[in-house]
Length: 434
Ligand code: CMC
Image 1 (cartoon, helix red, strand yellow):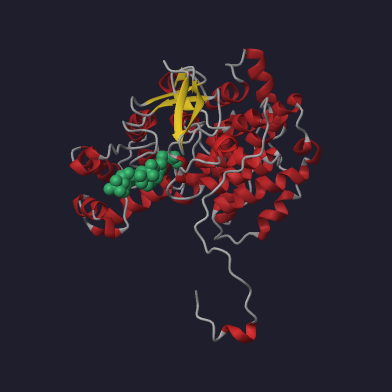
Image 2 (cartoon, rainbow, N blue to C red; image 1 turned 180 degrees about the vertical axis):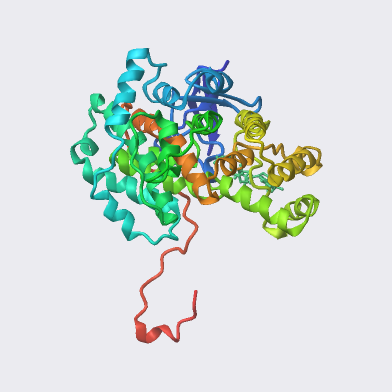
């Protein structure tokens, strides 16, 4: 395999190093290109840009492969839990029993919010979107842990990770309770991570939530499947913010904001809204697919397509199976699941989707599970954010520990006006608008 690339510009040849990853990914290293030639590369939306070297997650989008630190997602989904997976992603190895127990103790230690945080919740309107509350409150958490927030010491990362993972779950539950006008329920250290979250969401002061093991398993799996996904929009945002040396809470809050949009994490909410619209219109999905194929309609089949996967998203397969299992155990029927399956089948046999290699992604079926659990659509992206926290923390850590730390600062090609001059107000009416 070639070790250098040759680029000819203005009659001069530049030799650029070729980098090969551990799974054979290839890249031309253009770090010195501008210094050498005066040229930059242009790649709006970064579809061809590797922004970093990373050891966390491997995706082969053509083959539909996803691995967390080398372990296939299917194995993690079958054998692991969210917290064990989080540890693996953040610290680089599966924890020993002692490590897992120490980390679980830390999660319990930091699961309570500072009482003063409750006043912040009261300031939000009950109609506020929980993603707005989540990002604001994660940022606010740094004010309650100022030393920890400031610290860039490697030894403090474990506590930072535990604080973030534990508090984000409590914040999410409190945000939900606020939106329903319900009293807050404090975490119960008797429960493990996901069961504790369900308890905070659904228990009442006078009645504990009846814990259903299948629901706990399904939600834990959703967290696990979202735990990392290499350089997606929110993770790239976290790295960007971290490169400016902002604290880990600020980075995570930025990740939440980036995740919110319907093309990214917000797609899970958008899928359910889309399916509900189809159901209410009485369409069997075929009219909607026609609309999606008409570029002027502005509609997309939400939960379909991916920048990296040009094959079935392996997470979608696992979620679809879990979805069937959960509904059957709970003896629930969801008409939206039938519509989703019909849409999937029609799309996978439609030349528009086949030619563009558009397959269901992680968001296509996850909303149906979350509905079955009893979560409202506006909480779906919050669940994604809790799940993605380990990935954000691990990527933050890679920036922190980079042997060549440097602020992220892309360049641009300027296409605006060339030099022109200030015109006094009095003369402006006679000056034509440029
Ligand atoms: N429905 C209809 N057409 C689509 C869709 C879709 N969901 N996705 C892509 N296309 C078309 C697109 O219009 C374009 O067509 P043409 O070549 O004729 O212009 C072609 O497929 C390539 O699409 P693209 O916009 O270049 O793809 P992208 O890599 O920029 O966007 C995406 C990826 C995920 C934003 C996009 O597929 C999409 O909008 N999907 C729906 C939203 C969604 O489900 N997002 C969740 C992504 S997975 C979880 C996550 O990362 O958060």
